[in-house]
Image 1 (spheres, helix red, strand yellow):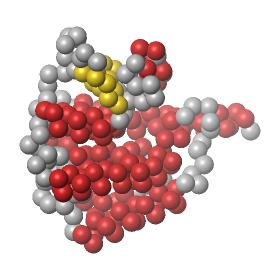
Image 2 (tube, one colour):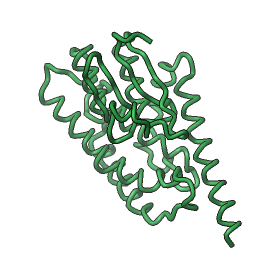
Image 3 (cartoon, rainbow, N blue to C red):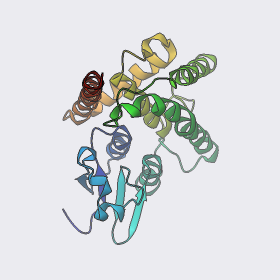
Length: 239
């Protein structure tokens, strides 16, 4: 690992990390190293990693000698702006297009991800038993609104037009987290969302030459099932 190259701190199983990983591949940014931060071992809580991200989340990004970033969407925007500013992922020569992309990404983070995370992320918290899905109706409401927007505007990609943007990537890796709880959320019930997901999924599969992304998603879903099984066993022992 070179001290002069940028470093991406990540865990492949983390969907936000995969957003940054895919952006780097799409803009052909190769001159960086990766360092695994294993959340299952609480490595994000180490003093060394706190220098990268004092809030202990991944991904993190370090660019020598003293530039640090965290938050996947911020890192993704920065990589495009610095290494491929002409990219349609986040076109620097089109302020209105960027505004629309930002609007979509703000919605994804502030509404879609927030509603989704209230349902799914508690599954990964050990020792708390099975999560109570009282937040599920809100997530269903958000999905219904998202579905209606796609249908009304006949959107192939979220920011409009015929080209994928950062908004599509961030939203895709948020929504595929639902695959971890198929008993709760069936995205095939939302035809416009499902069609868009399949379009994005085919692109991601074609990009994933070494199978890193597919393996990460399988691991993510398997770990979710493991956590739920452990919670079920704990509840039985406490009865």
